[in-house]
Image: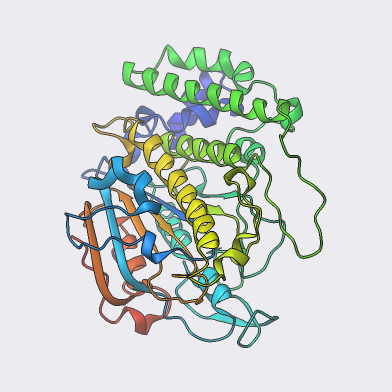
Length: 442
C-alpha cells in the first residue's frame, strides 16, 4: 500500500490523526513500500550510558572467548550470556581541548574533537560542544533517507535523572557540529511525544478512550496478524498509562530536599522512572516508531546520591576515592551493578517481546550497547572504555569476551553503522582513527 493509498484508506474509514501512532507500525499498511528484495527483518540500535567509570576488577572477565565468567557488575546479564559480547581494549583516542570527562562524554558517540569554547573543565584548555555528528544520529539520518526504513521519529533520546543543565558533560548525542541533542528524562513528556493529547501527569486521561472507536473500525479491515499486533500495542499502552498514573499518587519515602550549592541529588523514585522509560523505549521499538534510541543515566561528573541503594555520597566523589577505600568500592559496586540490572531489564523486555511479523524475539534483531565516558573514575582514563553489547546484529558473533589491542572506538562505531545497513560509511569521526577499517566482530 503506497503512502497515498494508506492515507486515503484511513481517511475513508474516518480515522483521526490521534489514532495514527497505533497504526503506523502495522506491516500490511507498509508492505508495498519495501522495494523488491529488501530484507523483511528490522535491525535496531539502543545505546545506554552510565557515568563516572567502572570498577575494572568487578567488571571485566578474566577469560577470553566463549568460556567466560561474568563478574559482579555484569552478573545481571547471566540470562543473556549467549547473546553478550564484551569488548575490552576499546580506547577513546580523541585528544584536544576539554578535560577527560568532557571528552569522554561529548566525544563518546562522535569520535571527534571538541570545538573551541569557553567552558572550563577540571583540566586542559576550555572547550565547546562536539565538532561532528554522533553515531546514533548518523545512523538515524541514513535510515530516514530510505522509504523502507524510515520511521515516525527516526530516533528517540531517553534520559533518567539527567540534570536541568546543558554543557559537554551532559550531552552525548549530536545532530552535527555544535548541535547537541537533549535527552527527554520525563516519562510523561515522552509518552505525550509518542501518543499526544496528554496535558500533564496529573490530568492523564486515557489515550485509548479517545481513539477506541477509530481503532475498532480499522480493526475490521486488518489481517489476523495485524489485529494481533494492534492488540499487543494497545495492551502495552494500557500498562504504560497505569504506570504513569501510579507515581503521581505515591508519596516518596524520602522526599527531595532543597539542593545545597554544588550538590546534586536524585529522587528516590529514580528506579521507577527508569523502568517507565525502558518500557516506553521498548514500546517505541515494538511499534516501529523508531529503530534508533539512546538511554542516558545522569551525566558525566554527576553527584547523584543513590539513596535507594543505601548510598548517601555523590557518585562522582565516590568514583575518585582510592582503590584501597573498601567502603567506597563497595558503594560503587552497588551503583554499577544497579546500572547493570537496568541494562539487563531492557534486554529482558526485548527478549520477551515477539518480533513483529517475524519469528524470534525483538532482542534477536536489536543491538544493545552499554558504555561509559571513562574506563575508571579515579584515574580519569579514556582507556578500556566499557563496551557491553547484547542482542543480535549482522556481522556480530555474540556469546564471547574479547580482549582487543587498544582499538579506537571510532572503528567500533563504524562496525555498528555497517550492521545497521550503513555500509557506504567508510570513516566515522576522526578519519585517521579509522585507517584500519571497521572492527571484525564476526
